[in-house]
Image (tube, rainbow, N blue to C red; front, side, top):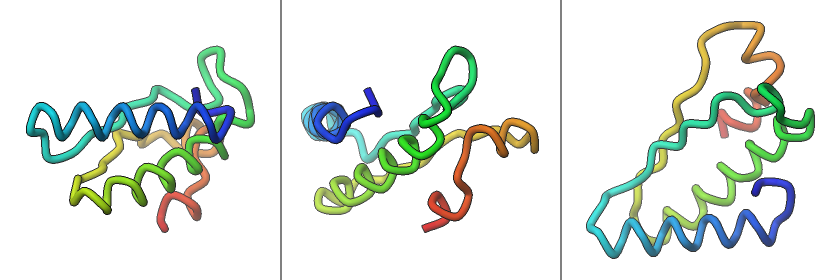
Length: 87
């Protein structure tokens, strides 16, 4: 789902519609773990893109966005672009 801008956009749009329809105030995204467990190395960057794009869309609707991530250094190094996620 994260490999193309089109599929990310479809996912984000469906999330926003669902959250608004059912009165949720946001979403906690829990992907265990980008680029691991059968994922692709490019998932590390695609995860950062997904969060960046979700943040922009959610902000328009005043929705919260959080993400559960690993605390293990080995997983962090493989799965997360910390600099991009910090933004």
